[in-house]
Image (cartoon, rainbow, N blue to C red):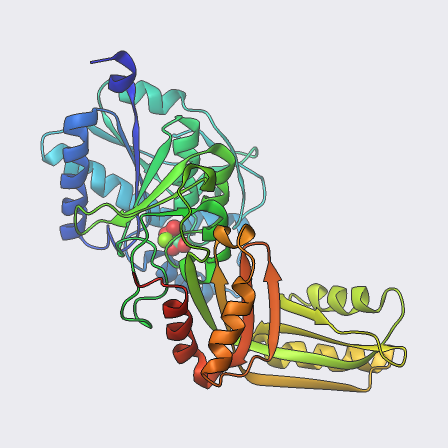
Length: 410
Ligand code: ASP
Ligand code: MG
């Protein structure tokens, strides 16, 4: 056996569902033990049990709608302390040496900012010391310590990011993310029956498929993996199957132009008609919306006619009322003729790094929809993604059409 093989560290992450009950924690302990028996050096990062974090948020709301950010993080971070210590206890009970470390004890330093602090660095001294003693190390996800010595949290769903950052700091090369699904699929298997599990997907595609994958992977974890060249292996904690590896696309054999298709049924479109064709108009519109906290997507400005433009954009349906009232004020102040809202849209997207080198993919997508009489209301594209806004009533049918058109079922 070579020294390097012996020294290899396995980093695993177990999500809230995977550690959702004592029974499940015991199951996770068994999985860790299996890994430990071959690799000897195992670090597991855990989320809080089940809905614990939501429950903690609810408790805070019972006191105040504006909790002190420091105390809010002090509260929210406790969920992970519970699961980490229970898991370590469980491993000890099964006869293995294990230790739980909080973000602070594990050397995870973050920005000062609370609630969504970024991880700045991880001093791995303590983790390494414990590994040298042949102990299994359990680390709380989602939390760290800032320069004021206060506990911070890194944003909801952030345990994935904690795990990838730990894997990067320990130079593990790969981070196994155990979750309640088998991996990343070509589309949502609840919407298209023949959706297929992907063996691999690139970081960039994964980020573009965020609407599909966000429930599975925290986007910042994907970014962190990309920056530090850590492969993310998303797999189920309920079986031993290989899942999906998220990695750099250059390492992959690209055989299809489209890797996945995704649907977002929560969009609404706002159009400003007759925006004066002057420098600064569009900047003013989107700056005003941003200041009010409205997130926009699918921005389109058409060809100038009679010294004015039509500008449209999509927002989350929940933000439509707010965004349309802000838009009305904008329209009044810069002199647009009309504001039109459309709450009947869905956004369907095809994503794939393969489309960079293969022309005609957009045309193929539009034709496939046209043949089935599905009208396209808006189109936006990026290098690896084509999105169309269509009628929400036809969204599921359109998803199935594109899934088949791009041969994702085979
Ligand atoms: N427990 C935290 C949350 O629910 C972090 C995580 O699960 O990733 O957001
Ligand atoms: Mg999660």
